[in-house]
Image (cartoon, rainbow, N blue to C red):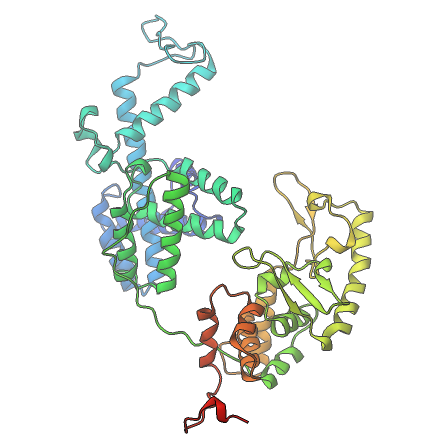
Length: 474
């Protein structure tokens, strides 16, 4: 495998950061770039020519690489092309319009270049040179188009055909707008991911020139070429809707003519009471108590892990769920059979909390009182990179998910069960016990009863064959 040159490695790392490539994927991007360079060297392709991308992907297919890996490799190589195009445009623009300056800000002729018009800094200052370069970069981004940049003049630039533009400010705005609306970090991560895919699909088209047509083509591409599920396509649609309305400040308009992904009827997996007890027996604290909350109260996993001690009202026998899905609050009964286990768990948390106070660990919003602590705190402290503070957050969801998966396998249950399966089982068992659908809807926190109606497919239907008038019921 060909080694990436040091300068190229440095520039490519910078490009990945500018395009917000996740840290977990950056090593894979570098690997695919190395494979691509090695491929071009072996088969005499020009690595700067995008015509070599197609045979490279074909080679990956021959090597039995998965579709996900092929897509990741394609994105890595396209980022390399975009980086080359940006570097090329910088050189061309600089050679045409920027005079050669020495370290003092003078031209080679020795005369000071009077470029201070509109600038805040003095021509011979370092700040001046920095501001000048920023303006050059802005002009270059405006000049990049789908055509070869060497063949166009500044008068031929069309805003509707710009590609290779910088989206750094767009991702910054997305972060700000999501935080302003107090959306979760998961929502931010998903929105950024889809906007990144949309950016790659449009070849980094200038954000100001994006239209509904681009959205239609992207959503159709997901359904036809990628074969994504309907829920995945809807997720991408919501992310782009957020981008247009709240970041670009554009009217999204009516999106017609999009090939919709086929929606299939999904019937949830439901466990029997015997299977649930078997899973409980293979779980260790605190994951066992988490699983009992999921089944006994019908909670989503994130709702359970974000519970605080003050959310439990043992006197009334009620558990309050704050900021559930859709930022809605609701109350559910606390299962009486696990009350002694809950109280024993809370007693064990007091010692840990006192120890944290003795070491003066940081608490969000100075909430040091015991009732404000997590019901399921993490075993280890987390360091905040921005402030270098140490905080104790709640138990991470992956710990519970992995524990449940192992417990299901050890219990010998031949069902695709997960943490959310306990919530499905909660609803199905209530329906089976003749609870009305509206009550179950409120306990689950569903906005529409149609969502709750899916559980009618998980229980056996009991009907009478002969029609009878309600007046004759005894």
